[in-house]
Length: 98
Image 1 (cartoon, one colour):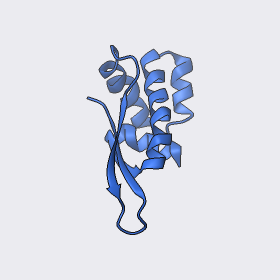
Image 2 (cartoon, helix red, strand yellow; image 1 turned 30 degrees about the horizontal axis):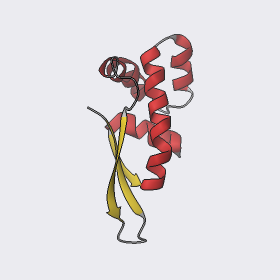
Image 3 (tube, helix red, strand yellow; image 1 turned 135 degrees about the horizontal axis):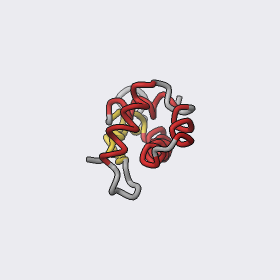
């Protein structure tokens, strides 16, 4: 589930989920951006083993790596949205910074 959420976050650059899931997904997404920034074959294969879509993998290594080249961490932001109507779960928005 986390692999799919990280892939969707890198694809759409913002997703809406529960606060607990967003706190789990943020470090995983940051690790994928770090792999993309390093850009060598080993890091591409490490990211490819986690990201489920080849187009998203290309986007990470082409666009996101260039965007975050000068930034040392802190690629994601979690914004609390309040409680969900059905079950009262705390909702959050997780997005890529910039």
